[in-house]
Length: 210
Ligand SMILES: CC(=O)SCCNC(=O)CCNC(=O)[C@H](O)C(C)(C)COP(=O)(O)OP(=O)(O)OC[C@H]1O[C@@H](n2cnc3c(N)ncnc32)[C@H](O)[C@@H]1OP(=O)(O)O
Image (cartoon, rainbow, N blue to C red; front, side, top):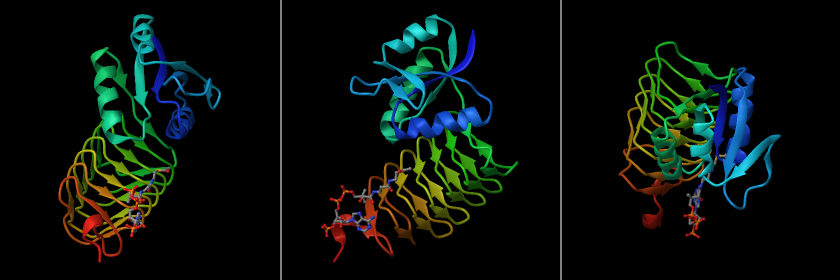
C-alpha cells in the first residue's frame, strides 16, 4: 500500500493543498485533472480523467484529498473517491492555529494563518482558507468554503456547501443556510436563507438591493 496522497484536482487550490500536505511531511503521488488540465500541477504529474482513480486504487493507493474549489463538485467527487475505497486525509497548515477543543472532520483544508477557536466544529470537506477565522462554538457544515480573510464571530453556524467570499465578516450567532453565497466583503448581520445570494455592508440579497 502506498502512503502517498492522490490529489483530486489540478488547479490553483490543488497547488496550495499540495504545499500544505508537504509542509506536514505527507508525500503526494499525483493529481487527477480534466482533459484541459496542464501536464503538471506545481511539480506533480497530472493524470487526466477520473477513471484513473480506480486504477490507482487497484495499484494500492489508499489515501486521497479532493482539492476542488467548487463546493458541490468537491462533495460529489469525494463520494466517488470514498466509494472506491480511498480514505480522505486532511490538509492543515502547520501555520494554522487549531484549538485542541475543536472538532475536525475529514477531507478538510485549513490554510496558513487560519484560526479555529475553542469548541468550533469543521465539517467534512470544508475549506477554511488563508487567514480566515472561525471563532468559539462555531459550526461549519460539510463542503463549506470560508474564503481568505473571512472573520466569523462566536457561535456562527454555516450550513452545507455555503460559500463566504473573501473578506466576509459575520456577527455573533448568525445562521447561514445551505448553498448560500456571500459576495466578497459582505458584512453579515442577520440569518441568511438557504440558497440566498447576498452582498454588501450590511449584506442584502443581490436581487433586493436598491
Ligand atoms: C484563494 C481564493 O481565491 S478563494 C475564492 C474567493 N472568491 C471570492 O471571494 C469571490 C466572491 N464572489 C463575489 O463576490 C461575486 O461577485 C458574487 C458571487 C457575489 C456575485 O457573482 P455574480 O453572480 O457573477 O454577479 P455579478 O458579477 O454579475 O454582479 C452582480 C451585481 O452584484 C454586484 N456585486 C458583485 N459582487 C459584489 C460584492 N462582493 N459586493 C458588492 N456588490 C457586488 C455587481 O457590481 C453587480 O451589480 P449591478 O447589478 O448593480 O451591476
